[in-house]
Image (cartoon, one colour):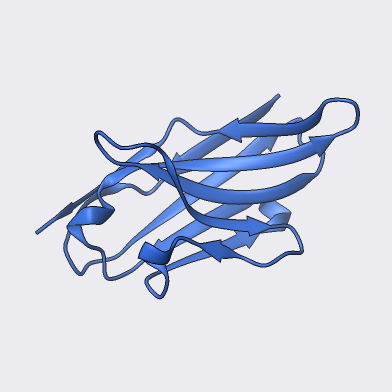
Length: 120
């Protein structure tokens, strides 16, 4: 089993910055991708930034130029640096880890989420 733990959420004023962290631990086989999703009140969960192992990073259009995803593969950790935050960035942010395991195929692991609130 793989455990995923996020940290770094909080309350910030518009224009401010926050940095989210996510660490994966446990029986890690081989991480295929690490990323961040978010879910605002009354809305569906949406991808924010995805960083495949050895692949190109993808960002939601709404965060391009403001958010930066990075990974520390040695620590199985992924970060999300969020700058120039807007009230519409308010959401619960979830970390997602993807593995492809023999026989089992794709395995998705999720954290419990961390709340980011941006005040105007």
